Image (cartoon, rainbow, N blue to C red):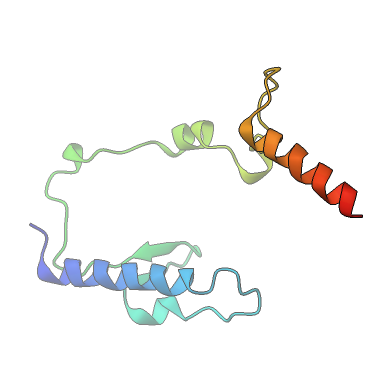
Length: 113
């Protein structure tokens, strides 16, 4: 079981994520200062590090499950490389119930206009 302080820090981190989610959709929202909350710190090389407390450590680093950064880069596309996904359905030659309904409403509205 991790130390109590590590669990508290993870709780702060989750709260930071929730606070960030509250800003989604508001382009003029100001972001909270997450670094000041104590669960994150900014390193000299500008990377952000999760702070879990000084009494949290890994006893046997060989037991960790890790994924090499290059492997992640190969498997995860960048934003510009993502395939475009369409909301269009495959053409099957059959009319779906929604298409039948849509044709019916088009006919009704065209008679009204």
